Image (cartoon, rainbow, N blue to C red; front, side):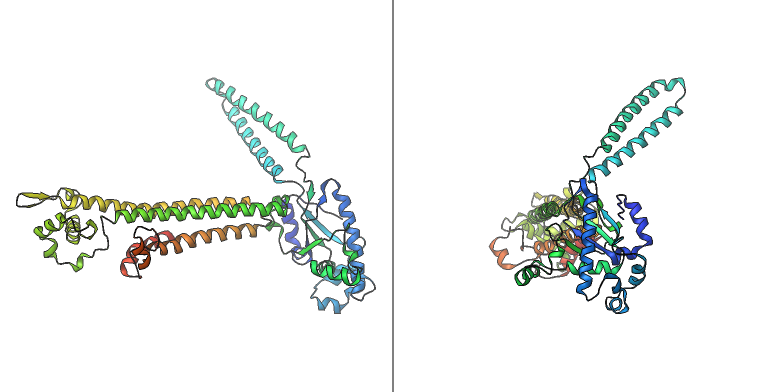
Length: 461
């Protein structure tokens, strides 16, 4: 008896009542390469083959036939719970297999069916609008709606004809899930085919393969493995893709993921370079609490420091503290026009400082906002490519997404932020403009927590 189910909801409903059949009795036949045009004939031959294998395997276990294997010793040995009841009810030659499940169509048909349903919903909505527009003023609108409805009807008719065609059918069916009547059948088949290529070669060398010749189906070894997958966990549409094609998709997805991670790495490096350029004129690490107010409020000292060409802008600490004090006490409106006069000479010390202050904080704010947005976009793309891989199960798809996202977050939020902000003296002395290992922090000091730590916390949220 073969029960072929292509509707996932029906499959789930059926197995919720008999989940033990999935967990204990189901085996997965990989790379079957069965001809879809003669699938019933292929399955009948497979059934006869399994009958022969089971009889011979029962003899190898020391039993005359399969029914004798329901004794308590064998059942207790393999921890079978209800095998004896199943064997009393079903005879091997009639009903070995309880159910067979496989993907009979490719994903195109399911997509077309969804599109067809959407078109039918749109057509019904247009019909409702036409019925509600009965007044004379809505005659023109009804004419437009009726034309749209006619176009939808044509599309629906064409799509229904397309769905009826057989071009959706797979040429070969590779993945088949076989649910046996009881655990003994599944256990014997699994044990019989649990032989590696090396083991099979040894059998052919030692005894010309006489002990395993009966296991070959049409001169081909069956790749049978145990499965614990519940039907709802299987991506039935993806079974249309063979192992080779799925592997190529995984490789392509992996390459794209690497490129995306590198691109986000580049964004962070670019932001680091911009911040380094800005800090040449503005040094946020100057701590004014260690500088006397009398010093940075002395206009003569500020005038001399400002006009000293030997002092870099980023190290003019008196100017920095003077302008910061003005910004805090007087606000940003007039800070750029703050003037210092000494002997009929005047300067605007806070004009360039305030511009650098705005640039530095704008860049930091942009980094805090842009990088999480870029990461979010990359995460969405990685999820799409995980779906593109056509994984066999939902668990494999979720695992693929988690691995990629974890790698992205680890590199961007952990490794990159450390190597960008850490300072290694050898590299710093070699090239201070190099974006890596030339940061301002040689240790986890308070300044690191105030600048880098805040960025990490915001990223985490």
